[in-house]
Image (cartoon, rainbow, N blue to C red; front, side):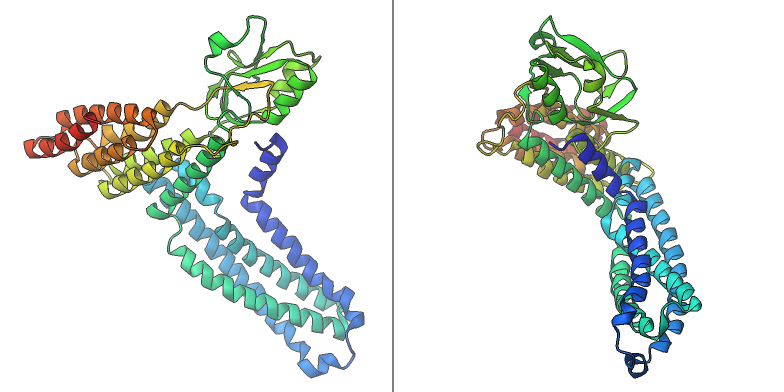
Length: 421
């Protein structure tokens, strides 16, 4: 699992200002590079290629890129608003972190700064005739880059903030979290089955210092503390859980460390909101929230709910497949971590959909068929038990909500096949 500092760095690089700042610095450096290279340019080359034209080109770029950047920002804000209103506010973060959008905006801002710096340095005469050649060549490259970026941006705008596109991003983030957690179901440590029974009476509770959701746990750092202190650490909260200073976040047993509490606390990152990275349940909850919003009377879009059910099956199938040999190797033997319960994943995904989709027969049929598919996954008795449970609960809700007997008979026919498995 990634360390705390690596995780913080990964969060930083997803910020829009970070990528835009890098592009801007590169643009400024490129504009000033002509001054350094100019002594190596042949004296008669500027006359041959007409490097004087660079002044007009840079002026056009500076004015046009400012307008394009302003337009792009307004379009992005509209896309974020659309994702919030039509999908779910929890998915907006994934839209904001879209690398394609960030690259587009960064290119436009960088091109504007490149043109602006070029014009300023040209007015000082620092380039000279030879420097103009270098600036002219780089400007042509920037123009080609802008054209390609604009063409890609036009295609990307047609999908930015749309329901299907945003739902696909949520599925991808959830699937990735599933794969990462499946490869290390206990964050690389030992399984902690029952916190009350498995934690020794001699263990000392470690309390957090803030109220919020656990976003990241640095299992490697906790292992170092336990190993150096010749003891064991039992993790009480995993990413996605809500914690307060009144409840222990971990238990330390026989750990010889003078700054034990502050050291252990430092490897738990707590924030105001949940994160997709180490928390597959959050992605599952967001998927079901998209379906619930689509089924609300104000939107009335059962097609999106049916689409989400299909994505839920794909996500859960990742967790169901047998883990490859050696993938569950215990990397941190002094660390004990609870796992994610399959029951919770089923509840997060299907309970809201079954509740809000009870009056819609097509949603009920798709849900029953999805549960039937999950129930028949080879070698997964846990899935069979949960599929039967949620099929029964969904059927009970549909019986109360549906008014036509024919619709009820159709649902019963599918649900009865699951009950017989």
